Image (tube, rainbow, N blue to C red; front, side, top):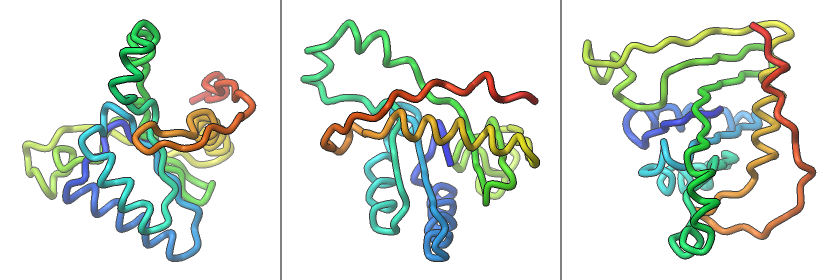
Length: 167
């Protein structure tokens, strides 16, 4: 699952519980959130995911201030390259591609008529493999989150598969 905004609110916790439930059924569960869009919730989400066995990554997490100062020009160039995709792949047979984020402001149940109006498309068939390939490429391309330091490992650079998706 990928989401730009993933709030650790009533809706986010509900989604996390569903992901944890899937982990309990031995389903391989991955969650990637954006480093700016989900900035205020990353530490809480990470702690929950670690406790529940959910694989968790942050797309382009904001680096520590010393890193920003050391590489300021590069920081300015890449900071606004965000992952605004909202993708949910289930059992490699269906995928939801959406405009909504994981937040109570997107939920009519939580926000009533004030909820933001967004759309999701259910994709089935061979296109799901292409969407899954794209999500996996990003998972492999951005394996490290600067919120929690990891030892660097050299991964073969994965080319973007954006051109593979045809609607």
